[in-house]
Amino acid sequence: MRRSVRTLAFVFFGLALLLAHSMLGRIAPLHPFVPNLLLPVVVYLGVAPNLPLLRGALAAFVLGYLLDLFSGNRMGLETFVCVATFMISRGAGLRLFMRNPGFQAALLFVVALVAGGTTLALRAIFSKPPPFPAGTAGETAVTLVAPALATALVSPLVFAGLQRVDAAIGRRREET
Amino acid sequence: MSNFRRLRDAAVSVALLVLPFFFLSANLKDPSRLNVVERFFLEASAPLQYVATETAHAVSNVVEDYVYLVDVKRDNERLRIENDRLRDETRLLRVQARENERLRDLLQLRQRLGGDTIAAEVIAKDISPFFRVLRVRVDRGARDRVRPGMPVVSAKGLVGQVRRTSGRHSDVLLTVDQESAIDVVVQRTGARGMLRGTGDSNRYLCRIEYLRRQEEVEVGDEVYTSGLGRRFPASILVGRVTRVGRQEFGLYQEVEVTPSVDFSQLDEVLILTAGSRGQRAQSRNEDE
Image 1 (cartoon, rainbow over the protein chains, first blue to last red):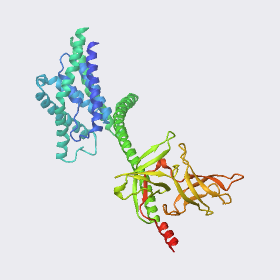
Image 2: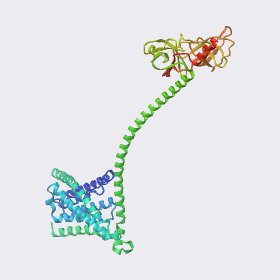
Image 3: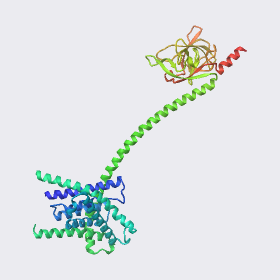
Image 4: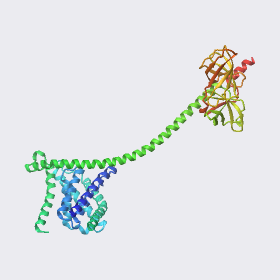
């Protein structure tokens, strides 16, 4: 039960970020530097200590599904990317990279690039025609790199928020 | 953790990875090319999908509405300030328009009267306990060649005459003052008399004295200066007859006149420093 609370807290934190993201889009148009605020959450789920695989995967699934719902994507696209990112973070043992904001940003830049590439690849595979969502190679590069940079920049903040949530739940657990 | 549990978790995790992939492929496929399994899963998940989409839209709308309301609040504040500013401007423009109108009337009066005039502004008013103006002071005095006895007019008609002057200002004796006496004529009939102020502190009122009984005067008749005595130019509106009282005996009738000028709203006046066109014409006639 207590572990569920922790997982639910991460999911709600992700939902709050998603809503903040949609508000941010209204207030300040950031295109093409649109950060994926859920990606750091999913990576954190992958590296968080004492979080069972099943709960983490479920949380990543829900977050991806929410992202699909809110972004109006084809159902399953972001869900798949989120679960895959969680699995990779979990399997690759990325905990080492979480030591300081610099490492966190670098890690998230790479993860965001891979996730963006996966999304483009999935679109390319399943939607015909058009065969590729971006027009030229340059445009494709911008589509991949700009959001990855934005995600890398905001990721230390998201991690700090998640660590606070984790710490708050830990304190509560100790008190009870 | 037991092997079974570990295996189960891994299997479920893989299923969670495969499921969206499966849905994605089914969603993006041409509906005519869906197989039975894909069709079954899509149809089975449709209600859940509908509820989830609607919920997401509702939450998104609430957030958007909140942001919108924040904007509205900011807009309201900005519009309120702008509204206040515009109201101030409108009020100022109204005041300026009224002033402009008064000055235009005064200019027209100046052109009509001819002669030398000085425009003056009312700078002080003596008020009675009934809020009636008893005396006014204007911002022109001896330095401006203003002398006692000079007629004072406004666009609405005769105000009175200069009673005394000092360097930079003058006191005006109003037509309603007891000390004021002006030779007047009833325009409609040509009946003549002497207009005197009643000095009433609660209303603006004058009386025409020495108006013979047989002269025809009615309520509403306009009363003008006659120009006799040369102090006041002829044909300046003084007021309107508001009461006529004829007694059975006696030589004269009692006629009350309400001045055309509302002294309470008096702001600008003209002081006639030299004879007006009418005055000059009359004196020429008299000389001949």
